[in-house]
Length: 211
Image (cartoon, rainbow, N blue to C red):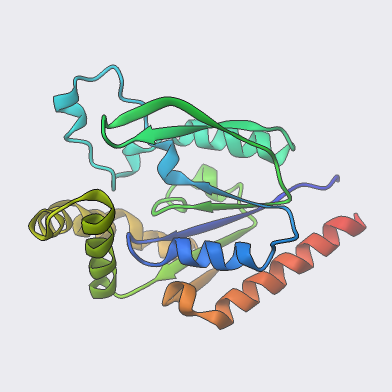
């Protein structure tokens, strides 16, 4: 059996610290071949829908994602083939005409709120992580991000959290915790968990070099 990339899934609720965990791992492999694929880039193309319909999109629901394309792209990367990663434009609520050329690497980190929800995606992963952070911390992080980066008001963030984010988290995101090989409390601040992951990745990479 030939060498193949390692695929690591990093899931968790909005504002849980998934990106911090992913970046902390990537920072430890600066000299190594590591790649991050964000599930957020794979929201479905909605160009055939009128804007009024696109505005109603529930971005926290599994059906919002084009997992078929994501799975195809992961399989291409597993065969060391490059991909053209889509770009999602939140201003027009559909996929942009732009794409990002991505070269294959030895470690692929797949990060997103629902990367553990689809069994087909889970089956492509060597390691599955769930970043588990208290809901009060997550809502505060989301509020700061949305106000600062997306120009949202406090009221609109709270309304969206209560109406959509919280129920979708409870229904779809939280249950995927049971699929995780490792649950990481407190996200990127959990240095012990980060160290364990880095050691595990290094071990697998060394084994691949021997094969």
